[in-house]
Length: 128
Length: 131
Image (tube, rainbow over all chains, first blue to last red; front, side, top):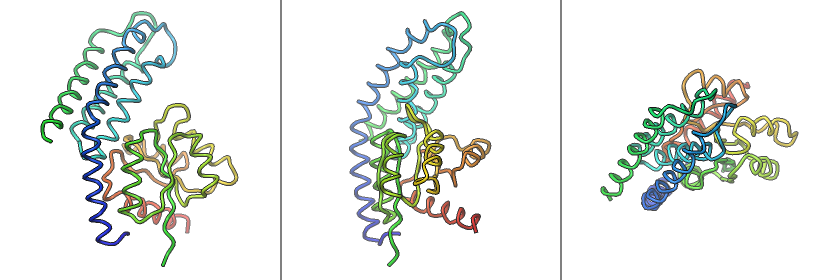
């Protein structure tokens, strides 16, 4: 364990990192929205076969990273919303693809979860 | 004075690596080395011989479980303890990570002020189990 003054320095550094992360949250949201927008038509056109398209897997990965990172930086609302988005995306990725494209309700769930991430990110920005 | 624990932190998210390094180094007084992917982790682990690897489960390309298997296959890294860092911490999921050969699991997201203590506790428990 480090000394008490080192702990204080770590806390101060953590506040700095948290501020920096908060300013980048908007950029991460824009990237996430773009990935989902790009992936949706590709994924919906995916023929029968195992696994999601690369574009869709990238969108899942981005939601997953945001879920783990935002919470660790002290933004649990953003992290939980991103985790819900990841689960919604995973439901589509793991769903049956034996003919018809994903049902619109599955994508509605994704878009609703994305809206929740957006709202949590906006609320975080307004608090600062 | 005891030697600082050397930890290899593996995660594909740069922000996560930054806060993890802060937690381990500045809060925990540990020596931290970083890798952003499974293949990089194999190289860094062989070169740096860390005391423990903190390994993200879901990474593009080579994921955490595959990286763990490959670490076990390399003679120079086969004995290095691995702790998974993951959001998948339900009991059955944790059992699966342990069956794969991890000594423990740390939930993600984590509290950076508590991460070093969590890691030390897992390593102590693993040492007790190992005699």
